[in-house]
Structures are given as C-alpha cells and as structure tokens.
Image (cartoon, one colour):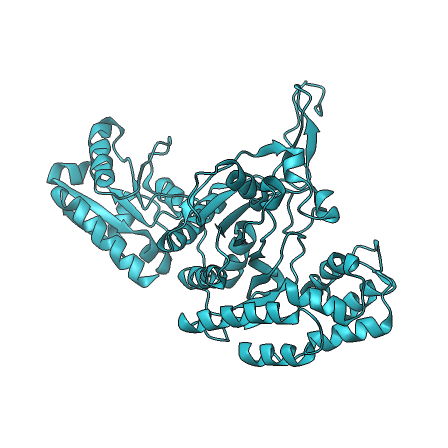
Length: 481
C-alpha cells in the first residue's frame, strides 16, 4: 500500500488502465448506440458472457504471441482462470455449450477485454470492443453482410472517407507455398505482414529476414527467410488492386500453377459479387492482399476498416472468417465470420476528425434557482420538462448569482437555461435563454440586471409555454449544429 505519514492511501491507477470521465463516457455510449442500431437493423441479437473464463477455454486459439497477453491467475478453489482477451472465443464456447441456439446464430456483444500488452499512447490493457458475428453459415453472403454493416456503421457515424480492405487467409497460405516457405511458418509470416501498415515495407522485409529494432529500441528477431522468398512476397503485395475484379484477376494469374489457390479466389469473387449487389463501391470496399490479421484462428476472408483522413489510428474495425474455432469444443467444424470494433480507438479517431462532440453533461436544460424559497416551483418546471422527454438538470449548488449558475451551465456545455426570478413569478412568466447564442455574442453576464439588458437568444414567455418554447429552441439549435 502506498501512502503518506498520515496513513492516507495515494489515489493512483494501474499502468495501462484509465478512468473515463463523463464527457468520454457520454460520447462512448452514444457511439455504441449508433452501432447497435445499425446491427439490429441487420437482425443481430445481443449477448453477454462473463469477464472470467477457465484458462483452458480461452487459450489455444489466439497464437503463441497473443496467448502471452492473456491475464491468468488461480482462484481460491484452485482453478486457473483468465480474463477474456477478446469476445470471439467466448462466443465459440457459448455456441458449443448451448446446442439449442438457432443456426445461423447472429449476435452482437459490447464488453471490456483485457490484454497484458505493452502500454503506450492510445494503447491500454483494458478496452471496449463491439463484436458482431454470424455462426453457422458457410455462405460468403454472411461475410458480405458483415462488410456491408461496417460501411453502414461508418456512414451513420458521419465518416466521409473510409475503406474496407479485404483479403483471404487461404490466399496467404497459397503465398507461403508460392514463396517456398514451410507451411509451419505461415502464422509467423502472417504476423509480420500484419504490421505492414504500421511499420512499412522496409521494416517488414527486415523482420522477415535478419530482424530489426523497433521504435523503442527493443530488438525484434527476424524469421530468417531467404531473399528469393521475400522477393515473391513483394511480388504478391505489388499486384494491381485498383478494383476488386482487377485484383482478383491478377492474383489468379500469379497463382495459376499453385495448387489449391482457386478456393480462396472464388470466395473473394463471391464477396465481390454480393457487395456489388449491395451497391458497395470499390472505393469503399477494396481487395488488399497485405491484410493478414494477426490472430491464428482466421481461416478464410479477412477484412479491416481504415479511416482515410485519420490513418494514424490504424484499423478501427476488423474481422474475418473462422471456420475452425468451434471445432475445439464440438469436434466438428462450424463456420463462423464476424468483425470487431475497437470502440475507444474509433472514438479517438472520430474526435480527431471532428465528427463527435464531447459534452460533460447529458442535460439539455439547466433550471436556475434565483429564489431559494420557491424551490417547489423550480422543481415543478424541472418535472414538466423531464416529463416532456427533455433532459433537464435543476441547479443544486450554493451559488445564488445568475452569473455563477450560467458559468456552471457553460462548463457543462448545457445549451439552454431556464430563469425565473421574483419579477417572472409575479408576472406568471419564465425566461428561456439560448446559451449557445450568448457564447456567439461573447456576453459576460454578471448579474440579473445585466442579463435582462443583454437579450441575445433570450425569450420571456407565459409560464404555461415553457415546454413548447424549450422544445422549439432545442430544435433550432440542432439544425444549426
């Protein structure tokens, strides 16, 4: 325990963890609500699973490197348990355990996951994922629907320029054979290729061969591939990819003599056809053979979304097909496909793009208290507004000056204030102030008398017209924003 001589404990956070303040939580919840609405339109249903699972349930599907990042410990009963690393393996456990679930089973889940990763800027050990998956369908239409939903989600969030990049693990396996690399080393190659966007081609080539030093100065051992093998990988990555059909024609020509290449190409042709039916353009969803995805459980098409005006945030929405994930539990293959949104990374990217507004309050209206002995009447106003569905806060502080109360509203970014003093009560009226308009005119309101003189964005109306006046003002503000 860390403390001082007084015996008080120092308030502090674990490394790689963070507190989320109200403005971040409000923005996050609204973002989740938009995504949830899109996928419920597609017929996905909600699911939740425990944060803790038996360690043997979680381990084995992620790959050696990822398994090292799983938090594990022993509970008092002696069982070794682990915090979930993602939401996909728990889904596989659910599908195997509950045999009466419909097939296909289409679910979404929003929950925290934990990874003992190296913390850094924007990289935390606890973060929120929003996953959506279809289990029990072999059709590439299931993959196309995931990709279509990714597009609809980004459109709903107001992202103007993005691209879904699509590849296929089967073609990457074909690449391994084409380059003369042992099949057992395929996942190591995929893991390195998955870093291409982050570190660039030169760094990837070093890691495929002799190794390199990362940005922090730590050495990364190389895979020891020969130059001729790396040259064939480069040839694959350099294929023309202006349109989906052009990319597929090019890879078909490259792998014409390589066994088993056709299946992966045909799967991507099916996805291309379905996306075309859905009017999803090559600009929004493109074939990109550099996409590998780092997790070992992917077996077919893989895809990820990038925001073209915020590339530094990397992939904010990614997934793929995992036809073998349930097999470990059931002993038989069951097809599955899905994608995951890094909610916090996406939120940070949207903030960077100016596509999301951060507000520390959920209230749209602050009812100020000018006459403390008339609290019942202020409460009645507050109740009327709430019953009309308007998020309303009654000022509960000790300040009685109008200036201080309006400063509070400004700090909380509450756009409307309701003001009633002795004159309003006597006249049976109430004043409604547009605080956004006041900010525009740079009004510094010091006391009620000055506020009365500075009438920018202010209306005094009969008390009975409070609710319609506030509604009208909020509608006008929403049209201006």
